[in-house]
Image (cartoon, rainbow, N blue to C red):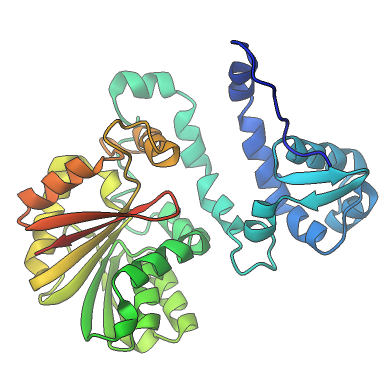
Length: 341
């Protein structure tokens, strides 16, 4: 059975350079396979070139080359002339799987995201995005509406990890502030586990419409409240037990983060906690690979955002008044930081 190429150990060679310069083809191939629903078709037994061409309404030559390329890169396996799903493709790219995350292609391949790296040389010279943070602070940017619609499935597992870490199922009476809620999955998941939790979600109005749809689907809409506006400007209110800050702080420099954290600190009741979900590299900033590499996303798409190691988050929370911060690693690339008032 053929799958991704296994190379024998050998000395220096040009392969990594060649593959990296052509890496855009991997993105295009995976995007196309998701759009054509190739993985779901194969899961249903449509696993020959001719059958896939008919099912996906494409040419036999095109689907053969696409699927063979996916075999080379480990997304499919090939046994004689039959294609099979690799284990991670079966779990995450088959629409019939409850863990399907293929919708993320809608946000992660937006032209404004991928296009930002067409002149990375200029970005490196400048030290930040050529467009600054235009869409981060732009009310109801279509980019963030697409994020809310596309990325919710990808956040289900980390949202469950947060709920478990907080022991949401114990049912304590919680007032929860969800900052830059986006799809709303973190607040919604806490509300599902804890029938005594009231969620107050902050984001742009059209983005919150998506979050409210997810709350409705989850059966928690009556306990899901919208606070529309810019997180730096909107009035949060007071006496929150928890403040969720998920996938937001990395957009900003440390001064801006501390400004927001002081505002969060004031909104929490004594003994309350801020729960942050972020890509947190080790102190060397090069491990683990995915959290460390996330700094490149921030270089291309923000004026001064970054993937900060825990020591820097700990210092920022302390400067904002928090008494302690604890890092909790998860099985995925994101980590949880719990900071106590």
